[in-house]
Length: 153
Image (cartoon, rainbow, N blue to C red):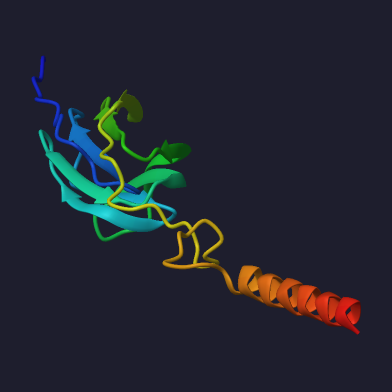
């Protein structure tokens, strides 16, 4: 059997990753989990579904819907920012050949709306002369005035 899917090439928000599940296996309804938390539930053969989430490293597995019995054992999955990770469920539960196949679609990131640079103000432009410059000028003026008085006396 050949299955045809369209890749979602739309941009992904900054700081996010897209996870897409495609079920091309001969398998009963199942839940796909990341770190033992279901992210896709009641998945049926032929399903093609997507979520957007925070990137990171996860443990990926599949269990029969509503149960904890493993259909596909845990494996590592890395979701990268600005990238779609497509997980295919392949094989047959009857033949005990179920497995995951992974495809990465890259270069989908958007530019961040802003860049957090802190609030120290060290790089900020001020509207006037810094206070330390004014203080230095006052001290210098007082010093010159004192020197002039000493010379006149």
